Amino acid sequence: MMGKLVTFMLMMIVSNIAIAEYFNTQRLQKIIGLFVTEKSQIQEVNSFSNAFAFSPASPREITQYLDENKGRMLPVMRISQLLINEQTGMYHHDVTSIIEAIAKAKHKDTEILFLMDEPFWWVRRACEEKGKAEACLDVANRYVETLSTFRIAGQLLRKHLPGSGIMHIEAWAELVLQKKTYPEENVIMLDDAEYLGFDCYGEIDYCGSEEYGYHSQFEYGTWVWDAMLAMESQQAIGRKLFVIPGTFLADGHFADIDALINQIGFYGWILNQSDKIGGFGAFLWGDMVENNKPFTGGRNILQVTNFLKLIARYYGIEKPALR
Image (cartoon, rainbow, N blue to C red; front, side, top):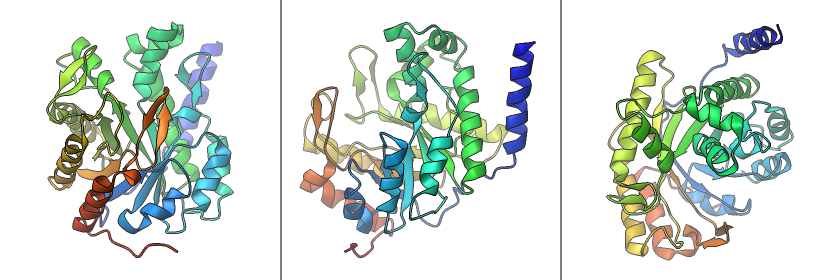
């Protein structure tokens, strides 16, 4: 009886929010954005981007970052880390604190993209590395629970923040493992996301690892592209591919600056090959440390900074610097 009641309640939630409009992907310009690691960096990238991405550690940081968006660029907000249940390794769809934090910001534009960053990979890791039973069940069921959770979360966000949307960037390793298990099937991507992509930072023709193997980045992109077109043919919401070039130096990724510049240039070229490729998200602008590994961001690599400005100018994005 309780199971039927829960199912009924979820159906009521979805039915009440189903009218929420999707993010408008038919834009005058391609989205060109950089991933910043401090809110002060938003002003630095304003003159050569029309978007910025950030990863808030708390709802309070959401407000702080949005307050710094004086150039009114499109915010791309990584929120999947705020929706994870560490006890189960699964996600929840309670976005109340996120919506409240946005409402407190000085700049109340609701055209926001919410980034779900490698969600299937995180569920898989919770299963394989931590033995989380619910996560293992979801992997075995091809992420049916995770898909449902993010479907509800996305519709709730669109209802409360009209004009907002979802971006799903998946880990290359997750795509490889899906293809290994189901070689004839499309890879699984969030079916209610307007922008879809993957990340792999390394050589264009040989990106990956010893553990999971190496493939060309074009192959990874083709897997996501095929899944995107299949979903769009079933329900058209204006889905587009979003490319994620690496713009940093760190051990185990780019061998040298030439390899880094090659990847940036490759994706700068790819961006112009189809109107179904909607944006270019450079990772990353500021420095950071992850798993005790230092990353030097593009702001501290002159060749990268200059190349990003050149790409932005090519796509018609050039503005006076904010003061």
